[in-house]
Length: 257
Image (cartoon, rainbow, N blue to C red; front, top):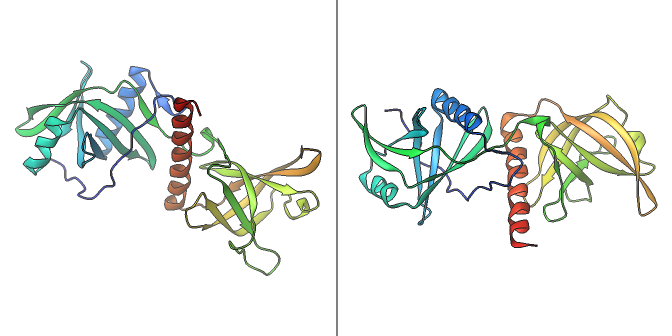
């Protein structure tokens, strides 16, 4: 049996209405089999109780079932037995993936304790880079702080509003008269990017395009930028922000808010 991580954060539920959701069984199975091949660690949040159980996908069968690795602690296996469902979270090439499973059945798999469950009805796969762009809302604002001349960026001062963001870049609103600082193909480095209430982090940007728009008769400029050499850990922070905002937005829509 492959080793599994001992410490993973508990999960929240996923959202089948998300634009990231896959529903076609062939596509779901393709992602599941890729997780098996990658030997990806899966964190299963047990409902009810919220216990986080580290596991891994061992097999995906053509009959519509899959096999999850058992835990070396029997107490955790008993919790798996009694769970009404599992909310599973993992990553594939830094792309967050989430899916739900009903109560699994304890089985013997190649001489080891394991669990069998049906394929998930849907699977969330947060796509990479430019494939999905999130429109930023006031409920979870994002701001970009740009230095001025020799002065470094200061997150304590008012920043530029981020209009939308993806894993590959962002667009900002620039007041009329300041657009000269953002020439297409020019580099803007360093900048500080703040996503909601999380601490800011440093990014380098390249201006891709510049266009004017009006807000209540007041001219602004939309500046589209690409991230330059964004480290994987920071890209992951951007993707997690996108996922969380989308999930919260869908939750409000379900409540009718």
